[in-house]
Length: 416
Figure 1 (cartoon, rainbow, N blue to C red):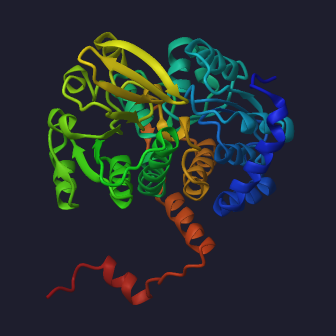
Figure 2 (cartoon, rainbow, N blue to C red):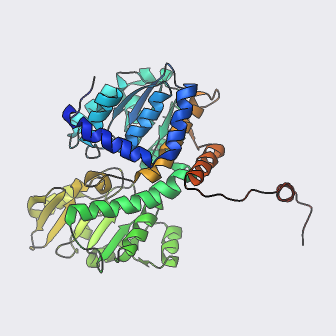
Figure 3 (cartoon, rainbow, N blue to C red):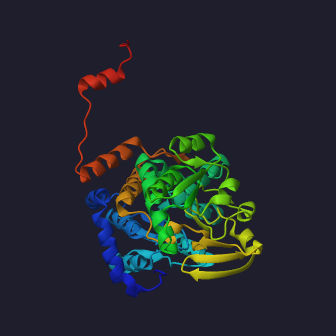
């Protein structure tokens, strides 16, 4: 069973999946180990992730481990249709995802995954697990654990835990060092710039580029925007993060001030209405606005539509809003994830670590006997194992502590 755009796209998709695999050596090692151990034999894995070449290799890894794998998209615009086709045709994995699907289809695809009654889930944004809690509580008893990929999803799940609503153990994959320090920072930074350039064909050098939020994704985006020659401005609500941005050499100011001078805007906060009515009112003619946070709520597009006298699509992923005073503002990719809507998402090399964390966390969760319905961090030994394997794949050796050094670090008697 599957619901995809066109099975004839499979040949191209397979080539892209195998191409990405070359740059995912850690996950390949784990896949070989899973093929031998079969840790997921007899288990069903429900995946709600961006349907990309990198995700395809994660799905293949779980299948090699013995799991029956079914996949749907975690964002209506993040599916790569050729990848979906190849997963179905070449690798025997059921996929329910079509790029550009409407909201109704998106949630129908989530329902299709849940009909398989998974024993464990891998989520990106927590839509799958929240749907289980809202509409399919009968499935909870059969689900050992869930793994959550992104910051937004972890925030939602911690809110569920605080409210006493979370009934399934969750491992916050996003919080692993080998995930957020690299995927969020270097992956988001590069892929977001890539998405903006592909959508607009505009020069970023010399332009004022406003980064809304200075978490790990914002740090990576600010770094890459500066690297391409933009004058980077950071907006923040957290005084510590704002101070960090200042110390990194970025201009920091309130959003309403940045709105007056920005040429490009990109939100990476995970919160709602970060760019709102009073910001649109003062933006320059020609301002380009995008989002690289998980959900399409960070830009108040509903309000912008009401403020505009006309709207039209200029090209793929670029919509022009003409304000009543004649100014034109441009929204990219409907305010959805620009790096996956108009580009291919994070490079395989960085997703190698993120998806290795997913795979090993799933194995850990299935064989843990004492996990309660709460949000857990990734075990440190998994983080370190992945980092070690990544360094090894890069041909890099590091030092190890001597017995004397280990003894010293464990002691407290020696002082000045």
